[in-house]
Amino acid sequence: MLESRHIRTFQEVVREGSYSGAARALGYTQPAITQQMKALERAVGMPLFVRAGRGLQLTEAGTVLARHADVIVGDLTAAQQQLRSLARLEAGLVRICAFPSANATLVPDAMARLLASHPGVRVELQEAEPPESVHRLVRGESDIALAFTYPGPQAEVPEELLEVPLMEDLLTVLLPTGHPLVRHHAVRLEDLSNERWIAGCPRCRANLLHLCAEEGFVPDIVFSTDDNLAVQSLVAAGVGIALMPALVLSFLCHSKVTGRVVARQPTRKVSAYVLRDHLRIPAVELVVEELKAAAATRVGC
Image 1 (cartoon, rainbow, N blue to C red):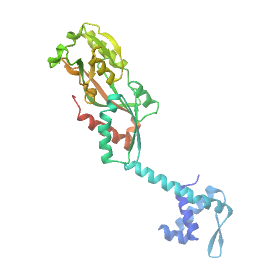
Image 2: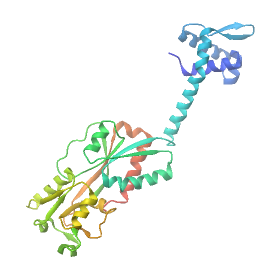
Image 3: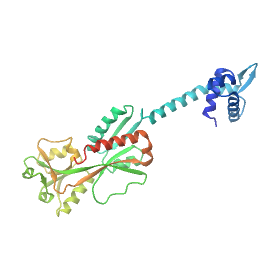
Image 4: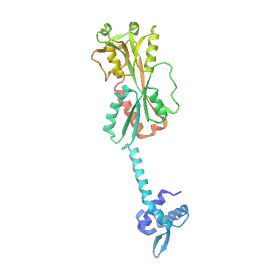
């Protein structure tokens, strides 16, 4: 096994033409240079130099190693520079997989802060609803997953993942602007038992069924879509009403739709998930911190 420090010293001996010259150039003693070259020759299994007068001459093995030394040292130097850049947050790529409303709110806020403080760090965005976003993280297809959960029994988080809670996202009822309950500041779900409903993604639909069951009725779900803009358009058209996270309403608001707080104030929890070991990667840790800061400005939205 060839040691990189021996290759660097060998390169300097070749450049200077002597052990003494290499010692002066590197700031070592001549015996230290001699010991390193003997160790390198033992690793190679044959001599690298022969004496030629007062100088040194490369053997055939030394000539072969000399041809590769510049490339080896150059690659090592480049690798060290790139690793230093990653450690200093001057570079790095972080892959985020998030659900649509997080990609439209939390992620842009966090990325604006990141761009201002560490412009060398790059972010790649993917979009998936939970639990698919978390599955991609486990499969190694992303570095950070943003997902939401509702109160009640939940699937266990895989042991290798760390959950970082970001915010509680308030749920609101979307009503057509002319709906009689629009005049109320808060709406009780039981007062909506005779309405037609529009359901969202499977996890959101399950939560809607759970909340309505607690109020003693089964919602009449006439349409299902995880397209937030389509939900608002359907409500505006009078097709039905919907339960919508406030995070969505912060960037989508149809002119013919009104959001009203649910009296019991149900929420969903939004969290970031990372592989435990990946939180030691500077760029990943930085992005998680920026997501926490972005979420802090939206708590209770």
